[in-house]
Amino acid sequence: MWGRRSLLQALCLVIAGAQPALTAEAVGQAVVIKTEVTGQSGPIEVDTSVHRNQRIKTSPSGLGQFLFRDGTKLAVGWGSSVVIDKYVFDDSQSVKKLTIRAAKGTFRWVSGSSNSSAYQILTPAGTIGVRGTAFDFYVGPDGTTAVVLLNGAARFCGPGGCRQLQQRCDCVVAKPNGNMSAARRVDPSILDTLGNPRALPFLSGNQRLAGGIGMLGGCNMASVAPERKDRTRPPPAVAPAPQRQDPPQRQAEPQKERPNKPDKPHHDKPHHDRPHHDEPDRPDKHEGHGRHDDDGKPGNHGEDHRDHDRDHSGHRDHGHDNDRNHDRGRNFNRGR
Image (cartoon, rainbow, N blue to C red; front, top):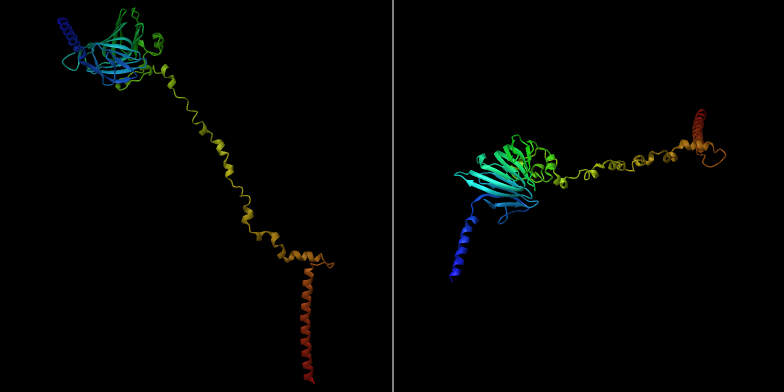
């Protein structure tokens, strides 16, 4: 009997001790989630709270953007793992200490309203000190770390010493064994140095961020973008090709001339204007034929008309002679 009571008391103590961890104060929340982002308690969704000591992981194509209470912004790219190591509030909305531990992957950091000395980013190759800063950083599988400054200033310190980043697009590459490059302007060759074309995807444009945090970047790294080759638009010569073949359509313009244009004189001129229809009505042409028909052939219309006129003229002359003879007779009788 007493053994069971002791067991129940022990379970109650365990549960009571676990409750503070389950009800830990939220230090920020997720504002953008793409593909798959998980925490210790499962998948993280938009507006999900994040807590101190929580590990955040992203899938090979995942992306998460987080906003902390003091305004600090953290973007976690694909294949990444990061732990919110320390988060200590002061009396205001700023923090006394905010430390994150980046195990691997690619990130973008934008400082909030807290003092620069409150921020610290730990990597396998060294520590990034923040000075009112925005920067991208990458942690490879072997711990090799690259930092590219976007705004403000930063300092990277490792076993091989410290490097100051003061100019926009300055970068440094460090290894866990202490080897560290000098600060210089970043260029696409850094991807060969890191041995990963997917490194620094926010600069190359392989992953796009939302909001003001996505407006930073560039540094002439967008020309690389190996993951976006399949998104390149094909040349726009295929669609306009049929539209440019207008000259063959212009060859059809002569067909617009109607074939009845040559026949217009036939319809425009009346039939009575043509000479061959008027030939039977013109006597001068028939007179020529009558002159050739003196051998008695029919059709001597010209000579017939002239003989007829002679007959009529002769008849008129005989009439006048009769009148004259009648007058002479009357005069003779009067004389007798």
